[in-house]
Image (cartoon, rainbow, N blue to C red; front, side, top):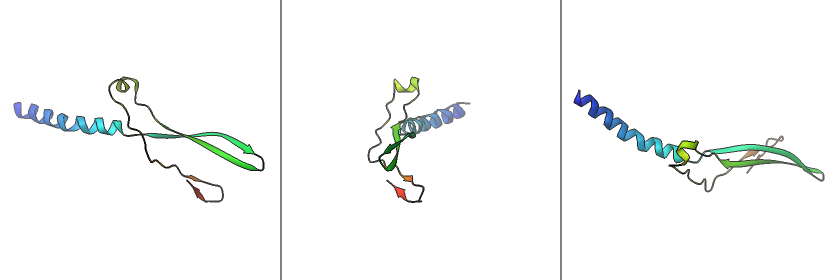
Length: 82
């Protein structure tokens, strides 16, 4: 019985830091924004934001900044824009 409890405690002790680090990673959310027309050229916009943590975890943990992130879009002609 003691061995089983020790095994459970060891598994929890290994799993908790992994879960915490996983939650702290940036989670990017790309939101389409209204089409804007400027003269003869149509433009599209997208908002990129870091999703916040759930309310209870937000008081204890902070999510890392997504530095050097890149967002790509594919135009109607098939070209990839960054």
